[in-house]
Length: 288
Image (cartoon, rainbow, N blue to C red; front, side):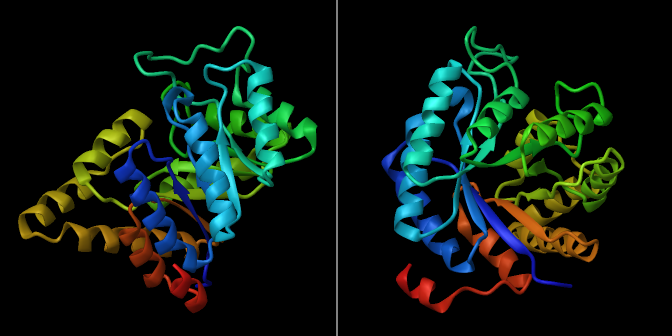
């Protein structure tokens, strides 16, 4: 089993306490030498300015390759491309291009009258600038608005054809979910790397709610395992074991990259990486 390339996702802080937590997370995980890190947008683009500040600060202070999330929500085409230009001017040349979640209080995405109607349109426009490496989102289980998995595969192919060079998946709980999706993408002619999104489980109840919103299937065995672990006070240990086992299975099946959704909490992600043989750079760890 080879050592994988890893990457981490952070989200921008909206309070002082959250800001401290972000920088503590970056300091804890930077020594693991990720190939890139990404910073999310809030729902409805609510953290647009905060995302830009976090992206530029991480790149400048930690020397990490940072990919900024960019969405189509609540902005004109000109405004969205202006944000992208500001990233390029700041030396940020990687973008995770997404349609984005609806603004708070709305149940479905409605394009801005003068905005991009989809992630495909956004990717096409960003690719036309020639300034960015573009990553897309992918869904190993049907997106809540998709008719079926085949529709998700077809849509991903459109995003790759539009200019995305790789895709990062939504999280999932069983390796076979990703492997089936990977096979379907290959059969559809998608040659670009598809990076599995890995969610270390910090809180089982919170993860279950998150899964329900995203359409991720919760296996019965996993629900039962966390119910038992809660009674025995070993939820953190179980989380590490399950996440490490998931990653090991993916690596045995030829996966080369893992993208961790850290939720700005580094401990579980760091424990899993160490269990996979990913060691910290002593010099970076000393600086952090």
